[in-house]
Image (cartoon, rainbow, N blue to C red; front, side, top):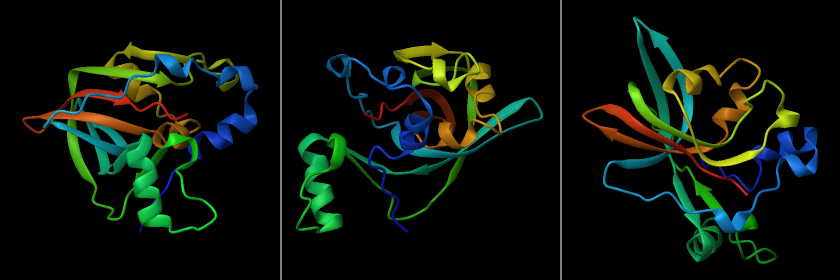
Length: 170
């Protein structure tokens, strides 16, 4: 099964928010640096038990720029549309979830989230650091679907997540 995201995850949120709430200075955007320990994923579950937090994540392929256009053409083969909408493209041909422990001192950087309890007040704050506890708390029943719709870059070392970076989605 292949999941594709075309500016789509924020579509529901955008419909509910004033336009100025989702407009950002895209010129400040910097792609997340990939290392051998980094994987790009969708988070499919977060669970805390026995004092430990576990994140279940499904690896995806995230493309930007010309690489996104090339991946789009390979997967979509649509003669009327030859470039990835919004400059990015996601491929998830195989659902293969893995569960990792989230380190209590993990570095977590978010781009966009419901920090006040009202999505209408949400705004983009590039690489805003939040605590591991705050990150986990954002996956409430009412916000979980939106938070899980963003791609995340996880840095995993020795089986534990030591860094989480929410991917900005234009």
